Amino acid sequence: MTLNTIDLIRDAALNGHGLAYLPHDMMQADVDTGHLVHILGKFTPDIPGYHLYYPNRRNALAAFRLFVDAMRYTN
Image 1 (cartoon, one colour):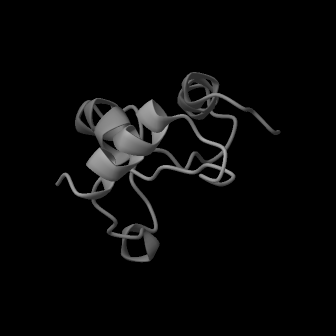
Image 2 (cartoon, rainbow, N blue to C red):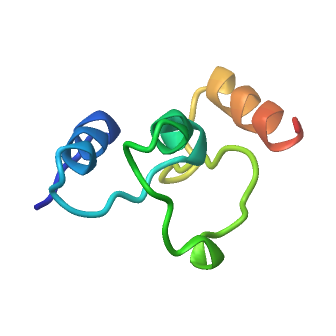
């Protein structure tokens, strides 16, 4: 099954339709209540923060470039 939104992926996992690879914060309540089980924990990357993907900055608007720079140096 291929799904393209995290809400659908979460719902599929909750309904027993396979594994879900989703943000820890989104799934913690379901793990705490026993609705889901965290597996493969040692294989989960420990990457803090947000990731921003974009094709290139060559033709980007000034506001976009400022946003990217602000996000890059904010922690």
